[in-house]
Length: 249
Image (cartoon, rainbow, N blue to C red; front, side, top):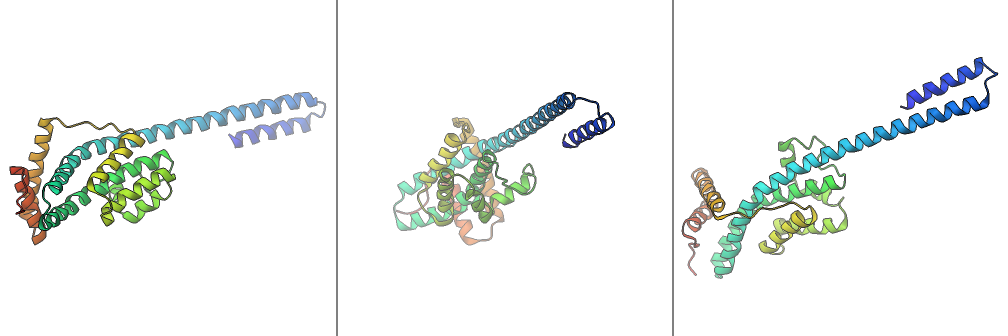
Protein backbone atom coordinates (compact mmCIF):
# COMPACT_ATOMS: atom_id res chain seq x y z
CA UNK A 1 0.00 0.00 0.00
CA UNK A 2 2.81 2.44 0.85
CA UNK A 3 4.55 1.93 -2.50
CA UNK A 4 1.22 2.43 -4.32
CA UNK A 5 0.61 5.66 -2.41
CA UNK A 6 4.14 6.86 -3.23
CA UNK A 7 3.53 6.09 -6.89
CA UNK A 8 0.28 8.05 -6.88
CA UNK A 9 1.90 11.06 -5.20
CA UNK A 10 4.82 10.95 -7.64
CA UNK A 11 2.43 10.89 -10.57
CA UNK A 12 0.49 13.81 -9.12
CA UNK A 13 3.70 15.84 -8.75
CA UNK A 14 4.72 15.06 -12.36
CA UNK A 15 1.29 16.09 -13.59
CA UNK A 16 1.50 19.32 -11.59
CA UNK A 17 5.00 20.09 -12.95
CA UNK A 18 3.87 19.49 -16.57
CA UNK A 19 0.74 21.57 -16.15
CA UNK A 20 1.49 24.65 -14.01
CA UNK A 21 -2.01 25.94 -14.66
CA UNK A 22 -3.67 23.20 -12.57
CA UNK A 23 -5.38 24.65 -9.51
CA UNK A 24 -4.21 23.89 -6.00
CA UNK A 25 -7.77 22.76 -5.26
CA UNK A 26 -7.41 20.00 -7.87
CA UNK A 27 -4.12 18.84 -6.37
CA UNK A 28 -5.50 18.99 -2.83
CA UNK A 29 -8.55 16.99 -3.85
CA UNK A 30 -6.44 14.24 -5.43
CA UNK A 31 -4.11 14.08 -2.43
CA UNK A 32 -7.14 13.70 -0.14
CA UNK A 33 -8.42 10.82 -2.29
CA UNK A 34 -4.99 9.16 -2.18
CA UNK A 35 -4.84 9.46 1.59
CA UNK A 36 -8.36 8.07 1.95
CA UNK A 37 -7.53 5.12 -0.31
CA UNK A 38 -4.38 4.38 1.69
CA UNK A 39 -6.15 4.61 5.06
CA UNK A 40 -9.00 2.33 4.01
CA UNK A 41 -6.74 -0.21 2.27
CA UNK A 42 -4.23 -0.31 5.13
CA UNK A 43 -6.99 -0.55 7.74
CA UNK A 44 -8.61 -3.47 5.90
CA UNK A 45 -5.24 -5.20 5.60
CA UNK A 46 -4.61 -4.88 9.34
CA UNK A 47 -8.14 -6.11 10.12
CA UNK A 48 -7.67 -9.16 7.87
CA UNK A 49 -4.35 -9.94 9.55
CA UNK A 50 -5.94 -9.64 12.98
CA UNK A 51 -8.83 -11.91 11.99
CA UNK A 52 -6.39 -14.49 10.63
CA UNK A 53 -4.30 -14.36 13.81
CA UNK A 54 -7.40 -14.73 15.99
CA UNK A 55 -8.59 -17.72 13.98
CA UNK A 56 -5.19 -19.42 14.30
CA UNK A 57 -5.09 -18.71 18.06
CA UNK A 58 -8.55 -20.22 18.55
CA UNK A 59 -7.60 -23.26 16.48
CA UNK A 60 -4.44 -23.89 18.54
CA UNK A 61 -6.29 -23.39 21.81
CA UNK A 62 -8.99 -25.80 20.63
CA UNK A 63 -6.34 -28.49 20.08
CA UNK A 64 -4.80 -27.81 23.50
CA UNK A 65 -8.22 -27.94 25.18
CA UNK A 66 -8.99 -31.31 23.58
CA UNK A 67 -5.59 -32.64 24.62
CA UNK A 68 -6.16 -31.59 28.23
CA UNK A 69 -9.69 -33.02 28.23
CA UNK A 70 -8.27 -36.36 27.01
CA UNK A 71 -5.40 -36.70 29.49
CA UNK A 72 -6.72 -35.08 32.67
CA UNK A 73 -9.68 -37.38 33.56
CA UNK A 74 -7.34 -40.40 33.76
CA UNK A 75 -4.85 -38.44 35.80
CA UNK A 76 -7.56 -37.26 38.20
CA UNK A 77 -8.88 -40.80 38.80
CA UNK A 78 -5.51 -42.14 39.87
CA UNK A 79 -4.44 -39.00 41.70
CA UNK A 80 -7.59 -39.24 43.81
CA UNK A 81 -6.69 -42.89 44.45
CA UNK A 82 -3.31 -41.73 45.74
CA UNK A 83 -4.96 -39.15 47.99
CA UNK A 84 -7.20 -41.89 49.41
CA UNK A 85 -4.23 -44.19 50.05
CA UNK A 86 -2.31 -41.41 51.82
CA UNK A 87 -5.27 -40.83 54.14
CA UNK A 88 -5.79 -44.54 54.90
CA UNK A 89 -2.21 -45.61 55.57
CA UNK A 90 -0.50 -43.59 58.27
CA UNK A 91 2.54 -45.75 58.97
CA UNK A 92 5.92 -44.44 57.92
CA UNK A 93 6.68 -47.30 55.46
CA UNK A 94 3.32 -46.87 53.79
CA UNK A 95 3.73 -43.12 53.43
CA UNK A 96 7.21 -43.53 51.96
CA UNK A 97 6.10 -46.07 49.36
CA UNK A 98 3.01 -44.10 48.40
CA UNK A 99 5.15 -40.99 47.99
CA UNK A 100 7.49 -42.99 45.78
CA UNK A 101 4.59 -43.90 43.54
CA UNK A 102 3.31 -40.33 43.59
CA UNK A 103 6.66 -39.09 42.32
CA UNK A 104 6.71 -41.79 39.65
CA UNK A 105 3.14 -41.32 38.40
CA UNK A 106 2.27 -37.67 39.04
CA UNK A 107 5.55 -36.23 37.77
CA UNK A 108 5.44 -38.27 34.59
CA UNK A 109 2.11 -36.68 33.61
CA UNK A 110 2.00 -33.48 35.66
CA UNK A 111 4.58 -31.53 33.64
CA UNK A 112 2.68 -32.24 30.44
CA UNK A 113 -0.65 -31.11 31.94
CA UNK A 114 0.83 -27.87 33.28
CA UNK A 115 2.56 -27.33 29.95
CA UNK A 116 -0.71 -27.63 28.03
CA UNK A 117 -2.34 -24.97 30.24
CA UNK A 118 0.75 -22.77 30.09
CA UNK A 119 0.81 -22.91 26.29
CA UNK A 120 -2.92 -22.06 26.26
CA UNK A 121 -2.30 -19.08 28.58
CA UNK A 122 0.64 -17.87 26.48
CA UNK A 123 -1.65 -17.64 23.44
CA UNK A 124 -4.03 -15.41 25.41
CA UNK A 125 -1.23 -12.93 26.07
CA UNK A 126 0.59 -13.16 22.69
CA UNK A 127 3.61 -14.87 24.23
CA UNK A 128 5.49 -17.26 21.96
CA UNK A 129 5.55 -20.57 23.81
CA UNK A 130 7.81 -22.05 21.17
CA UNK A 131 10.24 -20.43 18.71
CA UNK A 132 9.22 -23.16 16.28
CA UNK A 133 5.81 -23.92 14.83
CA UNK A 134 3.55 -24.56 17.82
CA UNK A 135 1.48 -27.01 15.79
CA UNK A 136 4.34 -29.52 15.85
CA UNK A 137 3.26 -31.77 18.71
CA UNK A 138 6.62 -33.37 19.38
CA UNK A 139 8.37 -29.98 19.65
CA UNK A 140 5.68 -28.68 22.01
CA UNK A 141 5.90 -31.83 24.13
CA UNK A 142 9.66 -31.50 24.62
CA UNK A 143 9.27 -27.84 25.59
CA UNK A 144 6.62 -28.71 28.20
CA UNK A 145 9.16 -30.99 29.89
CA UNK A 146 11.82 -28.25 29.75
CA UNK A 147 11.35 -26.68 33.18
CA UNK A 148 13.67 -23.73 32.56
CA UNK A 149 11.88 -22.86 29.32
CA UNK A 150 8.47 -23.07 31.01
CA UNK A 151 9.69 -20.89 33.90
CA UNK A 152 10.75 -18.23 31.39
CA UNK A 153 7.22 -18.29 29.90
CA UNK A 154 5.65 -18.11 33.38
CA UNK A 155 7.70 -14.99 34.17
CA UNK A 156 6.16 -13.21 31.17
CA UNK A 157 2.59 -13.79 32.37
CA UNK A 158 0.55 -11.30 34.46
CA UNK A 159 1.18 -11.67 38.20
CA UNK A 160 -2.04 -13.57 38.98
CA UNK A 161 -1.23 -16.31 36.47
CA UNK A 162 2.46 -16.23 37.36
CA UNK A 163 1.77 -17.01 41.03
CA UNK A 164 -0.51 -19.95 40.22
CA UNK A 165 1.89 -21.61 37.79
CA UNK A 166 4.79 -21.17 40.19
CA UNK A 167 2.82 -23.05 42.87
CA UNK A 168 2.12 -25.92 40.44
CA UNK A 169 5.79 -26.26 39.48
CA UNK A 170 6.87 -25.99 43.13
CA UNK A 171 4.72 -29.04 43.93
CA UNK A 172 6.32 -31.18 41.20
CA UNK A 173 9.88 -29.99 41.79
CA UNK A 174 9.99 -29.57 45.56
CA UNK A 175 6.95 -31.38 46.94
CA UNK A 176 5.48 -28.12 48.26
CA UNK A 177 1.75 -28.34 49.18
CA UNK A 178 -0.33 -31.51 48.79
CA UNK A 179 -1.52 -33.52 45.81
CA UNK A 180 -5.10 -32.45 46.62
CA UNK A 181 -4.06 -28.78 46.49
CA UNK A 182 -2.25 -29.44 43.20
CA UNK A 183 -5.41 -30.92 41.64
CA UNK A 184 -7.55 -28.04 42.94
CA UNK A 185 -5.24 -25.37 41.52
CA UNK A 186 -4.81 -27.22 38.21
CA UNK A 187 -8.59 -27.35 37.78
CA UNK A 188 -8.95 -23.73 38.91
CA UNK A 189 -6.66 -22.58 36.08
CA UNK A 190 -8.25 -24.92 33.52
CA UNK A 191 -11.94 -24.32 34.26
CA UNK A 192 -11.82 -20.89 35.89
CA UNK A 193 -9.12 -18.90 34.10
CA UNK A 194 -9.13 -20.67 30.73
CA UNK A 195 -12.77 -21.87 30.74
CA UNK A 196 -11.93 -25.41 29.64
CA UNK A 197 -14.91 -27.70 30.12
CA UNK A 198 -14.11 -30.96 31.95
CA UNK A 199 -16.38 -33.97 31.69
CA UNK A 200 -16.91 -36.23 34.68
CA UNK A 201 -16.26 -39.90 33.93
CA UNK A 202 -19.14 -42.35 34.22
CA UNK A 203 -18.55 -45.74 35.84
CA UNK A 204 -18.07 -47.54 32.51
CA UNK A 205 -15.47 -45.02 31.30
CA UNK A 206 -13.68 -45.21 34.64
CA UNK A 207 -13.54 -49.03 34.46
CA UNK A 208 -12.14 -48.82 30.92
CA UNK A 209 -9.46 -46.41 32.10
CA UNK A 210 -8.48 -48.71 34.96
CA UNK A 211 -8.36 -51.71 32.62
CA UNK A 212 -6.17 -49.82 30.13
CA UNK A 213 -3.91 -48.66 32.93
CA UNK A 214 -3.51 -52.22 34.23
CA UNK A 215 -2.32 -53.35 30.80
CA UNK A 216 0.11 -50.44 30.63
CA UNK A 217 1.46 -51.24 34.10
CA UNK A 218 1.92 -54.91 33.22
CA UNK A 219 3.90 -53.93 30.10
CA UNK A 220 6.09 -51.58 32.12
CA UNK A 221 6.60 -54.16 34.84
CA UNK A 222 7.80 -56.76 32.32
CA UNK A 223 10.36 -54.37 30.86
CA UNK A 224 11.49 -52.72 34.12
CA UNK A 225 14.88 -53.56 35.60
CA UNK A 226 14.97 -51.01 38.44
CA UNK A 227 14.08 -52.63 41.76
CA UNK A 228 12.32 -49.55 43.16
CA UNK A 229 10.15 -49.23 40.05
CA UNK A 230 9.29 -52.95 40.15
CA UNK A 231 8.08 -52.61 43.75
CA UNK A 232 6.00 -49.51 43.03
CA UNK A 233 4.42 -50.96 39.88
CA UNK A 234 3.64 -54.28 41.59
CA UNK A 235 1.97 -52.57 44.53
CA UNK A 236 -0.09 -50.38 42.23
CA UNK A 237 -1.33 -53.40 40.29
CA UNK A 238 -2.43 -55.04 43.56
CA UNK A 239 -4.21 -51.85 44.57
CA UNK A 240 -6.06 -51.66 41.25
CA UNK A 241 -7.12 -55.30 41.52
CA UNK A 242 -8.13 -55.45 45.19
CA UNK A 243 -8.87 -51.85 46.05
CA UNK A 244 -6.41 -51.95 48.91
CA UNK A 245 -2.73 -51.16 49.26
CA UNK A 246 -0.54 -54.16 50.28
CA UNK A 247 1.33 -52.48 53.12
CA UNK A 248 1.27 -53.69 56.73
CA UNK A 249 0.03 -50.98 59.11
